Image (cartoon, rainbow, N blue to C red; front, side):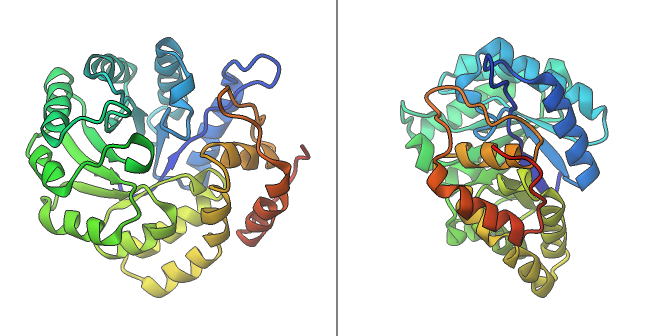
Length: 297
């Protein structure tokens, strides 16, 4: 089981042509290894999966796996609202050597709970790769209920869930009802510490893009049951947890990573540049977390 701070990594792009910046991608992988991040999610929501085509999606996964070189697990974002497309992406991730896949609930078409079970069962049966469910109803308009997660946890290669509702009662219910070897991850940075202290296994994090070492230390303290130390570390991160969502993810976090000089702030439409009125808020939160600002935009 992968535990701790798992970064939902941005996908760097070039300002001049909006192509994937492969050199910056490699640097980011090395940096996360150095900073103590437990694993990388490649091409999740924060990685702009919605604006990459299938070929680009598969290539980014492959490049992250190649650059990680076994030093850090790679979880590939392979969800889709078409079961056939999710199978295609998950197969590509398996062929690339990813350690696991992260599969968001089908968005827009709003399947029933029975539809969710059928969707994820079909993917699990088609591809022999560990698979993590991903529930984020605020983006998908589809809520995977705890009883559905429990039913799917009985499938051998469905190994965990990323619960991004921020509802700690929901998280506690999942922790109580699911098997002990089924991973419960937070997908909500502001409540991640409490979820882990309640028995969760880690945080698939946006904030870890900007403060990976601090997020890793906070998650480690929470996993060790040291609530006081975890709270002290999390207090330095609360500004980032808030300001990185002043506009839709990944707009603010891509800007913040660029502000650190790690990539360019380029985003593909319909994502638009971060509003300048929020620059000072994010910079203040970065400084609170001890992040050095070494690039001007």
